[in-house]
Amino acid sequence: MQALTVTPGKRDSLRLRDIDGPPAGQGPVLVEALAVGLCGTDMEIIEAQYGQAPPGQDYLVLGHENLGRVREAPQGPGLAEGDLVVGIARRPDPEPCRACAAGEWDMCLNGEYTEHGIKGLDGFAREFWRAEPEALVRLDPGLADVGVLLEPVTVVAKAWEQIERIGQRAFFDPRVAVVTGAGPVGLLAALLGVRRGLEVHVFDIVTDGLKPDLVRDLGAVYHTEPLPDSGIKADVLVECTGVAQVVLDVLGCRAPDAITCLTGVTSSGKGPDVNVGTLNRRTVLGNEVVFGSVNANRRHYEAAAAVLAEADRGWLRRLITRRVALADFADAFAAQPDDVKVVLDIRPDGQGGKDPA
Image 1: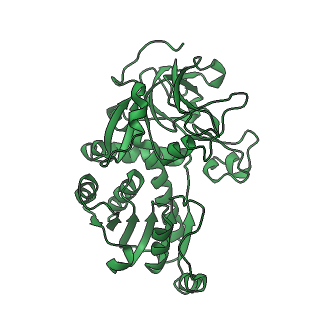
Image 2: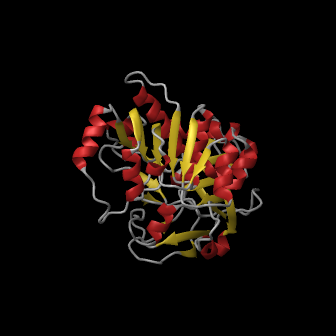
Image 3: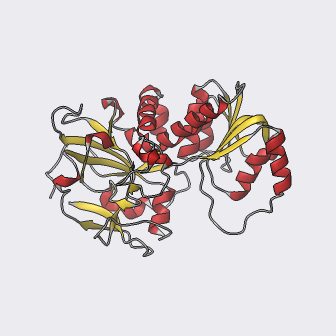
């Protein structure tokens, strides 16, 4: 079968290759891949910034955002042939730390977790893959065209869950939320904020086109000016760019008791000068909280599946701005000005096909 692979640590090694079908030992559920979403993580792996092949293998199959259809499943675990499913990207370490043992592998304490398409496990950009039933989340059958968005939704589902848990430390009655970045994660963070009845403001540098329209169609407010120039002091802030100056702006524009979630990963290197004393004083005297959030566990996947099932299907479809066949993968990684989410169609018709080989 065909798979999209890289050689970890080697720049520009992305290529389509023939590999063996998934061995039965990888799980009793056989899944035919339908689609894989692409994101900045995939680009960083292609650029050899990180990435780890499975043990004994010199290549890594790419792709952690995924959607598939069950071809074979054992009786009992609640899955059947034809079910639409998503594989959970991160898996617990083989000798689980306390967090992984509790099912909170997104909060792994020792870093020995694995991640499909990223760290130690092949990804989902291959025609077929296998999994254990507990590593799969079943989707509403009507989500075949947008279900590949599930993994990005899990990121913000976790972020909002953590925001609300932190808010229970004391009085918490947020009214205004700020989201920085109108990429897929930012737009989905805004969706979840609007669903909570908040006044949501989204900041991005794009001045026209699809991103502003998507934000406005949510009922949120789109901004192109820097956050400090807006005068907005938000109760909740979700930072989705990882841009050092934007992170600093977010930390300086908060209401008292604000909760700030950082989801974007900032590149190392010299950034803007920071007055740590001023930042500390504001945070302490304002009873403010800043925390980072990455990845998700099963609870967040199930919450994200409910979000997709309830959200406006037309709005979700518009997030997917390009669909590219697996054979044309190079085109998928050539950025276009209007890209929001680019998806590789592994099986474009969404139906079952040939047997794995």
